[in-house]
Length: 326
Image 1 (cartoon, helix red, strand yellow):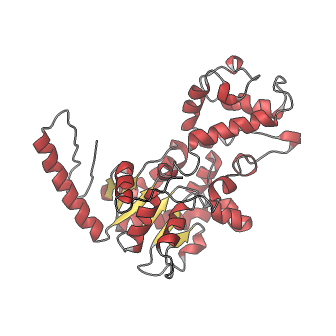
Image 2 (spheres, one colour):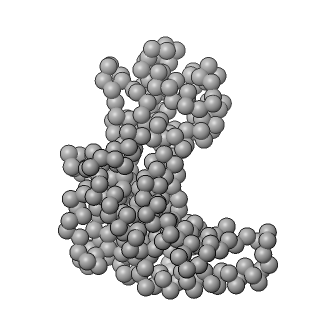
Image 3 (cartoon, helix red, strand yellow):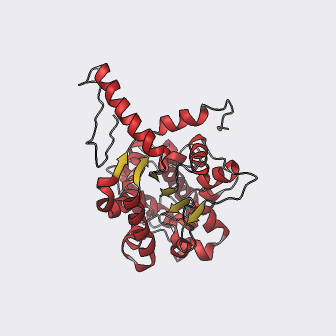
């Protein structure tokens, strides 16, 4: 199903169940012409969700499995309900409909009978999962930073960009896209852009902190990283760690605190100036979706929504036979 929303064109649903092939092709032609013209004129900005990087960095399901395994491995006695790791496992499982009593702690999480159900039910709660208290030796841990080490997991410079990142980098380099917004921690778009512009001055401005909005030149392409940047946090913890958005508390702070107001206002301003393509959607409703809803009312009439991860991948591979997959 494809929906295109514009101020001048009502939503055009394309569903083979209720239109003929000719009607569908006619509607697609209208959508294609509108989309192509506006894209080539540089009138789109992009909102990029986490699925764009799912084949290069851990997705939410993988991240949740890593967390459960870390608890399991850290436990001194999994049969002792007072063990901090056991308590964290219990508290996490209790966020689902699975009974803690039904979980066999004698085997690792991947071997649990209901592990798939647990992961599925935690998927859209992961910002709440990352709020679970875990305090080995009485020292409370920051699950995202201390346990999962997301700055290392997602900030590794050796992780290669995928086809989607490379295509986006080309569109930026060609001046077709000037504004990008993402909830992703990884630096794969930036890495792809650096490779694309090899030998030339790099102009893509990456914005994580509010003060980084100040030196943005007119016409300079820009990537606003709403939930922070793992690579920058890895390189400079003192400046960038506090801008990693992972938990429910982080989201509330991002939505309400004065520190983040310049970024919020800049997102609203950007979405008023440009039509927005929302690509390869948000994986977890608690993190990206709530931030998205904060500014949605300001640009909903100017928002284009197209699910196109397969199209991006096909287009990116088309000009070359070289695969970007390991």
